[in-house]
Each structure stands twice: as C-alpha cells, then as structure tokens.
Image 1 (cartoon, rainbow, N blue to C red):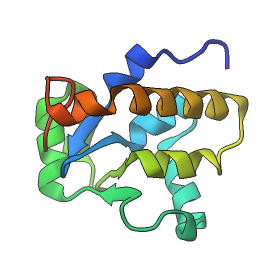
Image 2: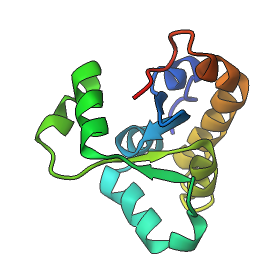
Image 3: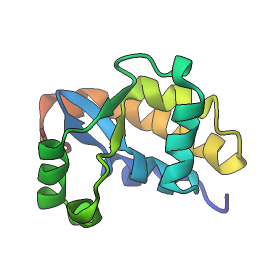
Length: 131
C-alpha cells in the first residue's frame, strides 16, 4: 500500500443500519484494495468466523434507501444482489482472513476509526445516517 488510510476518510464511509455503525462490502473492498466479490468470497469460505451480528445482509428497502441517500451507492439501484454490511466485529474478523499489507493497514485504520468515533456515530450528530 502506498499510503496510510486516513481515519477522516474512513469515518465518511460509515453508515448506520439497524442501529449499528457499519461499512458496506463495496467500501470494505475499496479500502482493502480488492474486489467486492473477494470480500464476499472470504465470508463464504469462512462462515464460522462470522456469527450472527458480525455481518448484516441488507434488505431490499435498506439497499434502496442507501441508493437514494448516497451518490456513492448509485450502482445499487440496478443491482439484483443486496449488499452485506460489516459491523465492527465483522471487520475485525475479516482482518484475520485478508493478509496483504494493504489489508493489514486498512484493518488498523478501521479499528482506530471505530474505537475513536463509535460514540459519535451512535449519538447521531450527523456522522451517520440511520437506515
């Protein structure tokens, strides 16, 4: 990885779904420098590492609301697949699977972002959008 991922950039990617601060699989893939299908394949290949509460499988209305509220999710409007959303625990577990230098640095940045800003997201001060 050529540069360290900035915490300020990560916090803009976090959304709130079902009362939890999460990152969507497409954003996680971009952060880790892989394709979304690689993230989802890692989950499929390691189901025991992702118990309930580690990943949220978005429902169609949730997907549609994200596409309406965030331009970066415009491609979801035409997707037949509902995205996955990784909770903080899911992101930690994903970090144990993806081993590239970029993935390791991204995991550290994600952990720092969630630990430093978790209270702000849950208080709803405009840093997250409730879906």
